[in-house]
Length: 445
Ligand code: NDP
Image 1 (cartoon, rainbow, N blue to C red):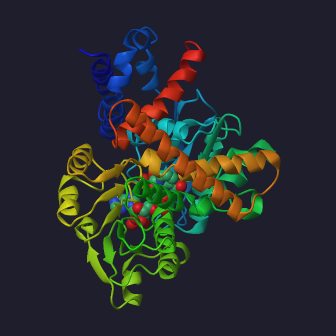
Image 2: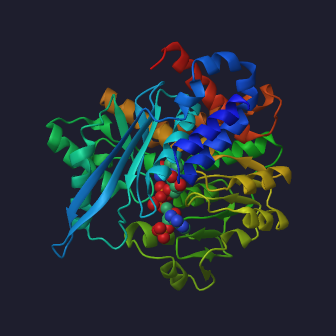
Image 3: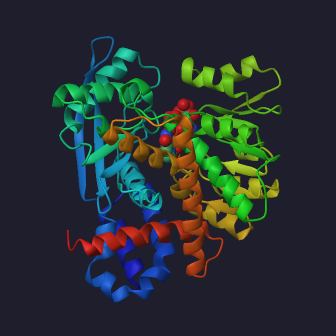
């Protein structure tokens, strides 16, 4: 058995019932085969892949809190510090009922390669809870966040581990988490969390960064492949932080975004998605997409799944993992879609990815195309260290430069290993080489 297959079998055996984690490891290891084979003896002796697929530390904790009726509720809390070879652990917190240890491990594992690809000094980690913020009052959210931080604060710090937002964790949650951290530590350590509000150490353009970065990547990838974004129809899934700012930037770059979705249904708007209305529905009113349809007579609301049946040139999945499956890939190809770039983490299943690639669709994995969020978080950390704030334009320009750079790093890596245009392989290889190098240099730790 090859070293790669041996390690994958070990991961499956040692981490039972964690299918998302297996999926993420399988994708990465498969595309590393050629790199590993060239240096197999040394990697084997150092157990490099075993160490790379085993988190450095996994913290599991109880999160008790009191709801508005006076009832005590209990949720599970997680922080997985996956790999700190190139910098402090960095990665978001996800609050969603689907969260379990396997989901957090898949996200943490992906984060290691993503953070490496940004070129910035950040290791990989991820955390969260099965807490569902939907329908909770602000006081309940605060009570939960404070209780979550009562344990998490022992394990994080600006040079140790720096959490941020993800699904279900936005500016409101980060604010409550930061307030409790400050209180417990009795110190103003701004760089301990990113995605903060602008009044207390946040960075301009962080809120927009993942969605904007996705579109900067799209523009560069298309340009490099002799195509252009201008004038194209774009299908977006999700209606959260990533989706909203992907839609906004798509408009700004001359494309027409026609869809968005949430966990109840999806919108097709033939006139293009009204961003101001979408922000009002999701960011201000925290309402469902039915409220969008009510305000836009031309827009169609479809309950359930199906967003990938909309005709588009470019598809940007920006909701969650495994939301673009084989049948969706077939529908996209049949409708003439020529590029898929992931805004979410692992939204495309392995068989759907293969189908898209083998049908000539340009495909960019999330660890490259959604890296603008964490990259701008690292810029927030830099500003916190300097005790300075950069202008929106300055941060946005740096973000764009980072996305273009990531594209060329992954394109070069794919080319160097004879897999030109295979951006999955390119992103995994480029991300891996830097982390592997640092791990080897630091000895057996
Ligand atoms: P938000 O919570 O702001 O939005 C998530 C969106 O996806 C919502 O519209 C939500 O609908 C929908 N969604 C979530 N879970 C499901 C589900 N199981 N089925 C269908 N729809 C679902 O999260 P973000 O926009 O921040 O994150 C979206 C994705 O992007 C995630 O994969 C995240 O890991 C990734 N990402 C985020 C970054 C960031 O900076 N925020 C950075 C890099 C990646 P509903 O409201 O109905 O639940």
